[in-house]
Length: 425
Image (cartoon, rainbow, N blue to C red; front, side, top):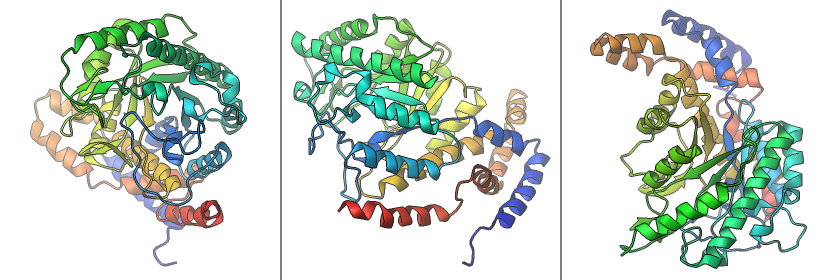
């Protein structure tokens, strides 16, 4: 078809792009080699709108909502894995999978969340091992009768707190098992929905209870070669607009004190607040952080990630700060209004494109100009970079990795929709 990219077009475009970047002192081959070593953790819950397999037709809770009803949603783990396989085939590089506890496979038996064990995820481990994916994990502290009050680890009810502590302890053991089996540490991240719709009379006590619960969960020392613990804060949510127990300040303090990873979710702050500015601060005090890349529109609405200024700023900060080996990048969004496989591929490719643009900067030159106080030349160079042919480098990277470039992405998705998703009714 006219306008289609051929291998010759891509190779010619890359040759010219390599020359232009070379004139700036940027080695495009080295940038692509570095990009190829970065793994992004895809989130399983995009494929089925955070339903999981615990109870068919279960209702979402904890301020979580998926909007839309696009046909072809995964109804079981086999369908979800097929959809993930297709998504990975459209994304250059080798990447991970982020699982929630409600995606356990229990053979049709009801297994309470505090009784989940590694065997309930055996097929996920086999699948990940066969395909070379690492696995990350999350306790699921929402969409459950014992979370109906809006409180879990910070509940005033000791029985409720005890249940969720046991669940998190079980999930840490599962995460350690993933890391041991797959030979790559599993990041096990704790997020809770606890909070109040209206202004509380007592902000302190729930936070004291949350701290006690986290202390109990993390008291058992596990092998850090197999598991990395993380905690995740939030500004507000549906039903917790006025007060969130696990705020950013709470978890920042907790992570620094207890030497666990801090999870920064790009949808969990004020709309005008970017996490790019936070990375260089928190990494002065923490060894590593977990990054959840989302796109909040008006609120933490988890829109599909796109190549926006915010995303580019985050990736530039990671690269410019030399943080690539200290920041674990994961995605966290769920859009049920569009093809779910496309949502995975578009969002992950956007994150990788932003990383590539950051890797193609003449960082040392920019830093030297800034140190010398030549802000005029720094600004001019930053503006010049916006017109550089990074897209030709991206197309070459896709060709290198055996992944379809350009508009071929949507053609692949539509074919998969006809062949697989349409059969789901």
